[in-house]
Length: 256
Image 1 (tube, rainbow, N blue to C red):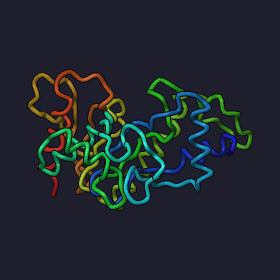
Image 2 (image 1 turned 30 degrees about the vertical axis):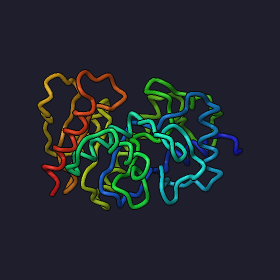
Image 3 (image 1 turned 120 degrees about the vertical axis):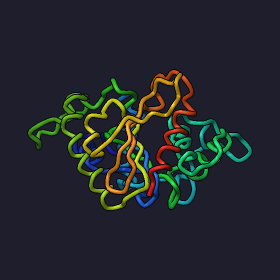
Image 4 (image 1 turned 120 degrees about the horizontal axis):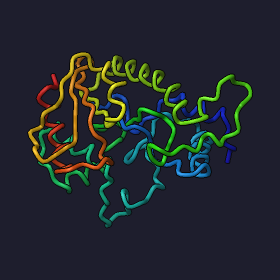
């Protein structure tokens, strides 16, 4: 395994990785990929990525996916998959867009066969590139600093956010302009103010769910419907399932 250093950090952070193709019609963007609970865990992931060719596109299932991945979300034949909290709620949005019935079995089928796949309906990406256990964790300050660069963007999570947010927003605007997906759903409520310029005119999305405190904003980027909403991992009062399904219905009403 390659040893983690600042050159790999920069290469990984400067790439724009997706699960699924950018030609897929519905994009989901989270804050950052899970993992990175320890420096050893982060090093294993980033160095494995480097050793396997620094791929920018991977697939969760289907053709091109890592056939060796067998876990509770992608179990062996004959076993029922457990619904992953973020993916399952992304897929409830998709069911709303597709005007299909909301059920856990429909979500389960999409999760195991269609989400983030080659030529499938969805593409998954992150606002920030480096894997982190949660919003408050940061292990990359422990990576030995590369004296070939003047500034250590990874000295703290704050400095990393400040350095990479403008870069990532420019990439997102560029790929939106090029690929023109039907919808981009940003599950990044804590960074909504940075994302609002993508939307131009926008409005709060009233989903008529009186017992639900989750929030959403809707607008357009060219022909793409863009929603910024509460992340599924956040504490939500009321029906989480109905909230994300209702977002999908709202997107469907605006898709041209």
